[in-house]
Each structure stands twice: as structure tokens, then as C-alpha cells.
Length: 565
Image (cartoon, rainbow, N blue to C red; front, side):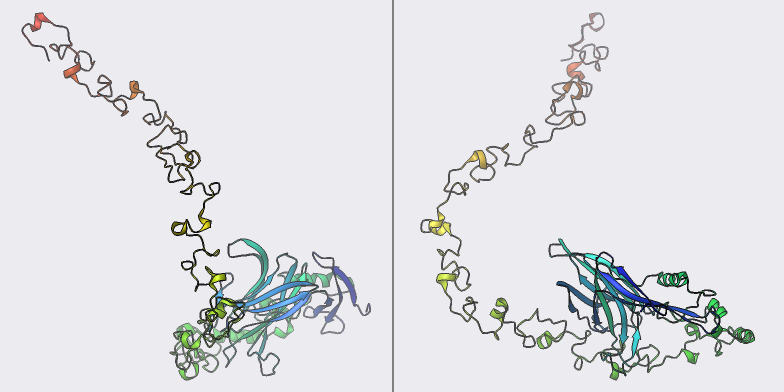
């Protein structure tokens, strides 16, 4: 094996003790037998073997939102993969419930349950087919990604991207992990067919998968080739094709056209072409001018659609006989297509056939299979004969009220009140039912037990909180009983008038309701009462009320005058 430049190598898998073995060689394809030129190509060919699991997954066509499940065994471990095709961009995508339009974004999604986070996943070799006969010579096949997972047609596919998500149960509690690989696909169609089928190879590896496509993969491969000492390239090789280094050549790229002889054009022809194109503004219908279908759709014959290839184009007349229910311009004939999403669901007739009428809603419908191995379903499905030893409550089985009173709906507790399956009705049968005698240790609030208000005030209706308002079981009544130690203590500096703060009548007389002006008539905060307190209240001086009884008499001036009463 170690001849003609072929080398062997072993590498340890990422995160694992397992090894991968491979052979590699570099092949130079050159046009001249003597020298290597810039348009020659170099290919580094590798053949690797590694312990992994690889399965081909087949996605449902665009119109079907089925979910396939594959289980893959790997050395005693179990890995579950789920594949789905949805409309929209993941994670905001939804199930496909009708025909998608050309150009509408879709999501190819591959899920892998990996609670222990032991595995890696590599999606590669994706193809699109015109039918589900994948190996037929009549089936049109379009490759979307190569064996490394690199996208070959970026106009149609973006990805694959990969992320790890935590799975949750019904209580929204995280209990596991799953690995999700997803890619964005722009909806397209093959001529004369409406379904597009997609498949991908999914490689599941312990630790980490190797040979994944990366953005700088081409640069890495080129660096490996140029770093080998036995190669004597005169300059960098020119890459073409899609097998190893990326997309095909495009002579529209000026740099490629400059160095690749297959793209070299006669400069005179180019100049003449430019001269011919220079008059496109005045004569836009020339063959050398690009079709301007936004401005001249009805005038330029190149803008007319090919109705055989694209019958749904708005420029084509609708063919409702052939495309009823498919072309959005055609009304749906619900008599011929009763299962179409635009037709009202007839669940009485098509349960089990129409996806809008699942069997879970009508499990006993004739269009659904009888599920006799589930007791609840067997009870209501007349097609299931009952096994009275397994389903003694079945309507077709005789009622055994001695054993199943309170369990069998035909044996209600109202007719069998003393059955152990029925709760004791002590209000009616307290003296007859032995289960009605209370255990005051377990039922201290029972009416037949003496009340213990030290423990159960506020809990026992016989011990109301009004009797012991400060009991721990009773809510504090801070408006009525502010001194209750459970009531929050006020900041008397901020709320001096609070009930729990001492009244400071010296400062707040006339403001604090506990310091009324009737008790503090001379306080500055209270209005002056000169009729009663002249001579005592500084705001009522005797000079203004000289005859008031509280003021000293001035007989020299006021002899014969009466004092104020």
C-alpha cells in the first residue's frame, strides 16, 4: 500500500479512544506533460474507515408532514433519530399542511436523542428526486450536498447547522438532551411533477464525527497539498468541479476568465458585444440585451412563461381541470377532493383518512383500527369484546357491587355507603358506620372532639379569631389592633400621627387627631379663640380687647364700660 505516493495513517477520534484508519494520495491533473500551469488541478484523495453508524433517511415530500422514526444500534447503545420537513426557518418552522410555493423557505430537520451527550451527528449526501423510485432511470436526481456534507447548490440549500437542545417533560422540567441538525431549503419543483422527495445520509459517531464540511475546508485542503515537499507546483492550482474543492467554474468571474484558457474570449468580440449592448436603453428587445421583465413583461416575448414547465405562473391561464386544488387560482372540487385542506373536514366520513380528523378524536370510527388492548378504548369501542376478568367494569360485564362498589359506576356509593371503596358518610351514617368514630389525635377539629383553642384558634370554627385576635393562626388586624407585635412598627419620625406612635401634642396639637384644639386652644396650629382667651392667647392681646374679663381693668379710660362675658 505504501507505494506510488499512497500513505496510511491513524487518528484518534475526538472525545474517544477509538481510532480511524485511512489511506491518502495526491493526484495532479495537468494539461502539459512537462510543466504544471495555473489551470491544472490537484486532488487529495482519502479513503477512511471509522467505527460509526450510517443510515439513509428519506424525508416526506413537500405536501406531507409525516414524521419517520429510525432506531440505530451501536455496540449495545440505542440512538433514536427523528426526521422532519417543515415550512419556515427552524426553530420558527411549522408542519406542512398544504402545497408550498416555489421559493418558499423550508427546513430539513434531523433530531437525535442523546441524553448522555455521547454522540455526534453528520448529515451528508443529500439528494432531491422527482419520485420515490430513487433508483429508476426515469427519476430526475439532483445532488444537494456531497459526501462531506458541503452544500453544492447554495441557491437551493443552506446548512447543515447543528445545535444541542434540552428536552422537557410535561412539567417543563429538563430531563434529557437531543442533537438537532437543520438546513434551509428553498422550495423548487421538477418539470411535470409536483412532489419533491429528499434523502440524506446520517452518520452517527461516538465522540465526534470527522470529515465534516467547514467554511475554510477548501483552504485547509489546499494548504495540505502545497505543504507536501514532493509536490513541485509552479503556482497555485486552479480548482474546478464540486467533488473536493467547491463549486464549478464561472467565466462570469473576471479573475477566472483571465487565467483559465477555456474562458478566454476574443477582445474584439467583447468590444463588439459591448457596442451592440450599448443601445439597450433605446432598443431593449435586442437579443444581446437582458430581458427587463419588470418593465416590458407584456411586450418582450422572452418574458412569457413556459406554461408546460411552470403552469402555475400568473402569466399562464389556469388549467383547473388538471390542477384543481393545486393551483391557488382554481377552486377546489370538494366532491372529487374531499380531503383537500381548502375543503371543510367531513370527519363523519373521513376520520382516519383526513389528517384533520385523527383517530385520537374518534377512536371508535369505522375508518380507525380497533384498539382493544387498551382498556379505556375497549370499553367504548363496540368492536372489542370485553374480557370481564381484565375489564370487570365493562358495560357488557355483570356488575359485582360486593367487590367493586365505589369503583364500578354501576355500583355508586349512594347505594353502597358502607363499602370500603366508598368514603364514610358520617353525616348520615355516623352511628352505623364504624369508620365514623373520630380519632381526636388525628382529627382534632372533628365536631365530636373537644375544641383545643390554644392550638386551633382560627382553624377550628369553634375557636374564632375574635376571641383571640393575636393568636398565630389568625391574621393580624393592624388597623384595629396596632400594638399586635406582628404588625410592622412605624417610623414615628416620618409618620408621627400613627396610632402606634406616642402623641406629641406639644408640637402637633391641631394636626394629630389625638391632640384636638379643644384641649390645646392656645397652640399656634389651632385658630385663635379671642372671645374666650383674650389676654391669654398672645394672638388676642388686651390692647385689642381691653374690656375682656381676662384683661386687667383700665378704669381711667373705660369707667362705665362693660366687660366681655
